[in-house]
Length: 345
View 1: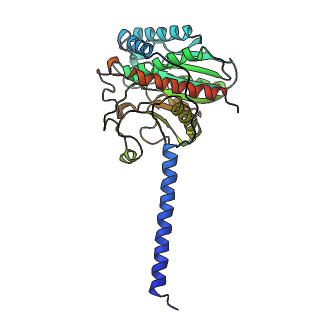
View 2: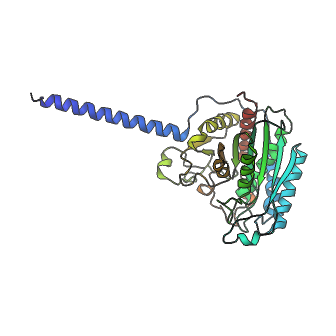
């Protein structure tokens, strides 16, 4: 028996509606996975950081100790000494991880025979699970590297001063990495790769790794924020007035914890992106080394070249940074780290 045209039309309409609803649900799930929305935030921080101290650290690294590239070993050593001295003053248990590059490739031969160093400050218990917070102190070629990445190191130093004043339930290692920039990037001679591999080989239990890379560039100008994919413009702000948290699907729990702490700590906007780790743009800093060794890791960043027009140029100077908003980033990371260190399993 033939179905009436009205029944056929009605069935078609129901099928279209169901298809639209399914696509809408799938899109909603994708957006939720990508932006990692949170519905509760942690309390506002009671701590403060003098933005002038952040400025002093950036000027010391970007002006006094420039250029901090792998060819200028004296500069890297001076930077490492400065960082270690600040870590000691903050009350950290300071150590170094030294190594000589072993890889091949253009430019690498110029580093052969040189000794490079990661500088580490430990707080809290000497044993048990740990949280790693890291930033690199070397620069690309001859550039001053104020945002990339004297900003991250200055934040790491001030984080040390905050952690040195409190009791912690878990060990926290602050690590200043060397040799992140080319020609070592994406190789096993990155300072972060050497550190992450040493933890993996030692069987260390790493609860989380937080990478801080470029946290000083902010703008309220419309159009100041760019994205690698056009679709992201629909989900994120078009002005660079926020700090970002980036991680893979395997890191989504840490992303949510970080976002809740950082968004609650200050009035600085915080946005997160959670995407496959192998998507272009996801592994552009030292957190990649911890992913490669099986650890959970995220990146805290002002989004680097997608915001800072001075990225990897001679114009990346200390006077271009926003130290007030930088201080809010550090306070947010501090609250997140303390929450991770003191939460029960």
